[in-house]
Length: 190
Image 1 (cartoon, rainbow, N blue to C red):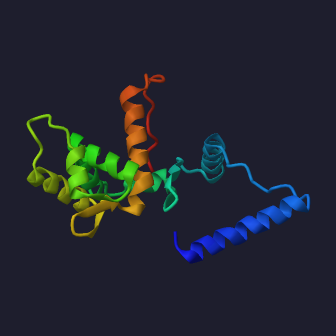
Image 2: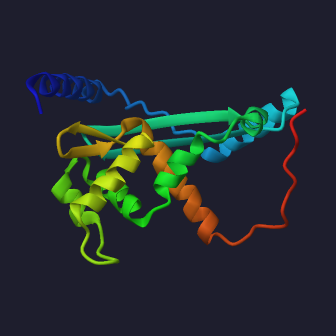
């Protein structure tokens, strides 16, 4: 940790301590529930006569240097009318056990060397080679999911952290959750 960061933390700590000594209660706003957001989307759709909104949010505190907050939303009508083909590269990059293992290690450990990442590959069809590793790393880089900061050192792209975790969470839900009811018809944009 650098000196400027330590100084900033000391100032914040002193401010908090002075508030406690003066009897001021700590202020913290409760995080909005996702169900509240869901009902907000529903009310917005009803009030503005549109088919709805799809969104995702996330907060990932992987370590003190890697904190990610992300929120995105898309109007359903616009999403249904969009060209979905740009998503193919990302989905193809994620549709691989070795690449998911590499992403998992990068999410858990942060920046990793090529040697570290080679260890993440399981020998499902013999011992993994550096050639196989670099093939998977190239695919993940091409999809914009990882970046190479310097030779032989990789990390998950900051803009990809929450979206990748969201894709994994929703994919796991689709793969493991029991069906909730009969299929519903998706409203057609007008």
